[in-house]
Image (spheres, rainbow, N blue to C red):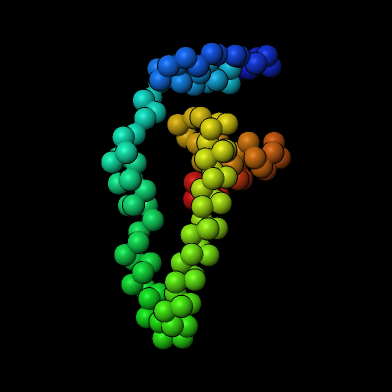
Length: 127
């Protein structure tokens, strides 16, 4: 599969033009858009909430945090972790926008690891 090295410029004039820009970027990378890549606000929230598993994390660590650190350490801990989690989310969003494919995580890890480690990085990500 050959990928051309020239850039594709697409003018964004309305909401539907984003889809055109995405298609042009995928075409530039040598792919054809086959899947609908869009979520509503409710779908996005439901998907995100199911992944983070808030109830499991809270119930397993709540007793220890309150017993040994108190409410102030729990509050500060949540704020610090939320800030760092936001940094990770922003980094992944930036990567996702650069490599918009359906198997994103495997593709990202292969591209970011380099040619030598691409297979191992993709396998570890999937495992």
